[in-house]
Image (tube, rainbow, N blue to C red):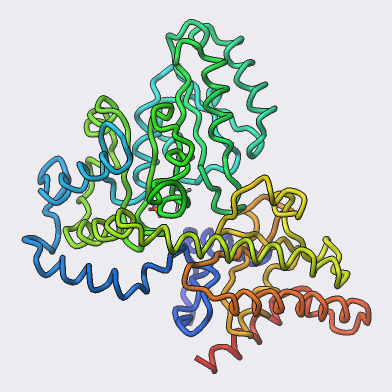
Length: 447
Ligand SMILES: Cc1ncc(COP(=O)(O)O)c(C=O)c1O
């Protein structure tokens, strides 16, 4: 006889069932995707497949005095390799100091949970990463002192900063501080924060220099700026940013992260950032891996890969946009966001992240999967309601032929969908699950 569900089990089942009903239940993707063309991972420079990096890593690893474990928290065992990598990265990123974290998530949680002081104010872009939210939740910043602004909206940010300064004596006098948290390249939209305008605005609103910019370069590291040092370096804003986060897990094909900042902030983090203090630090093999990836940045290899990556991105958007129009695909079915419309392209840098907006991301993703391409559907709550998409992530290892196949797959799906819609005969195709399941089944048998 079946055991009666405990109240805990009932609650957990109900929550998952509710997510199922709303089509937002998260599941791990199929691990057998190696044969598919990768339009999903954050391995932007395809360094994880680089035979050069692999041999370099194995050679360095075989010579390294320590490779296993790390022995404990940095505060307990400060590995020579860890200290050496930090010194290298402070120099590379033209910063006073650098501090390693086990991940970008830990770094954001560590920074935002402790650096802002009681009475300070936080302002963040509405699309800021979840790790910043988690840090703020455990910070000493009251809820009513945390403010978001519409994504990349300079007019709204300007109004908000002036209002906060006018309302709060401490901000006016310089006795309290305002932290402004942005990402240089946003992971869901592939949009860039207008960093120079933001830095200028902070200077204008806070002449006492108590407005601090914190930039998360997770998705820009390795791709933009001289030697892939990021967008802050690209714009020469190093001295106007309090702290920059660079992660190793995306374009650098490693794992871990570094915050580059002032000596004082580093010392403070060492004393108060719980996500750094109460955890075993990165193991030595990780440190060697990250060091090798930075060798590829320093010697110009990454720049070469990045140039190719960004040329693929331009090719993709410049080809898809006019095709959508000439094939009469309605924007309500498939479109590119405003910043990737032909009229805006000249104003923005190409990015490896391209959201293909559609209210039916699952069927489109399933269709592409059946053609051997892996581009994941992204829906609420990861993106705002009404902004569902298939997020295309391009890689230096993609070829122009891959991009052509992707474009024709998108167009073919849209045309097929329109035909079905016109005939109104196969209602299942737009609702997703049945087509997703059958396509997954087809793919599984090919792998
Ligand atoms: C903008 C941003 N910041 C931080 C992180 C966290 O970095 P990590 O994957 O190293 O934990 C991510 C990863 O998803 C990210 O997209």
